[in-house]
Length: 187
Image 1 (cartoon, helix red, strand yellow):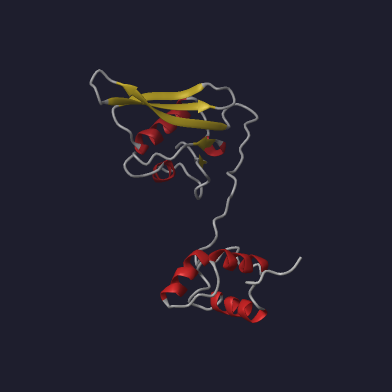
Image 2 (spheres, rainbow, N blue to C red):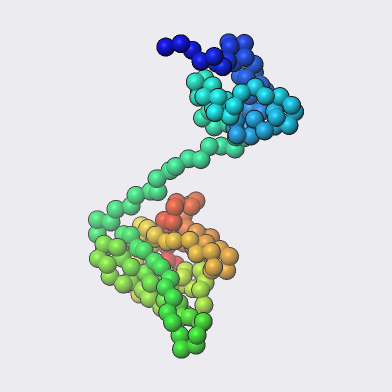
């Protein structure tokens, strides 16, 4: 099989590598490099050729200045008994007035599927959720030290997510853990 007539020579290929690795281009993808070079009146190769050359030289992995996205799996928590892992949520309930809702706050033990705490409020608030968790611990005589609380983020709760709301209420031991909160205690 013969080589294509329009294949880049070794010198042309090296020039492409020199330019794409130059300080002004090294953080850019070929999709960004080709138009910038065209604006300067320079055409080295097509976008797909730049991608192919960079891939062959192992230079395509991550060219942006930011760190590459990392896909971390959430921490797995397995309940082996009751009162180890709770899940909570807020559900809308219709009211007699059209367009107005009540909010059902529910805390569920995922092992026994028992409803540990539930309240209905007229507003959605992280402070109310934290208060329900505290009262649930007190009512069931639980030490929340080892309880893992799974929560979704709620951007409508005063502009704070579940992480921030429980942290402000004193029920968070460490940094965000993909919706899993570990309350330090129910004092």
